[in-house]
Length: 73
Image 1 (cartoon, rainbow, N blue to C red):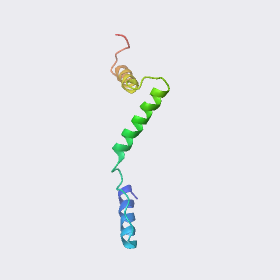
Image 2: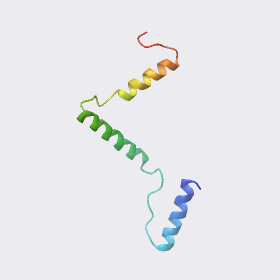
Image 3: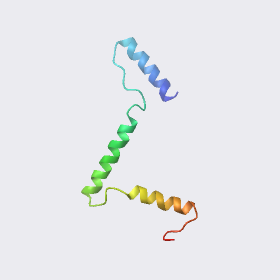
Image 4: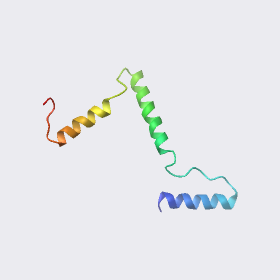
C-alpha cells in the first residue's frame, strides 16, 4: 500500500468517526528539511565550525573527480 493510499484510507476512517484528518503526506517536507538544515547550521556554529560551505565544497570535490579533474589543477 502506498503512502497516498494509506492517507486516503485514514481520511475515510476519520470522516466516518467524525475525527479530524491529519496533514497530507509530503505537505510539510520542505519546511521540515529547512528546519533540519537550520538546526545543523546552528549546532555547527556552537561547535565552532563554519556554518556554510561544507556540503557545497564536498559536492564540488566529488563532481570534479567524476569529471576527470584533479584537485588543484
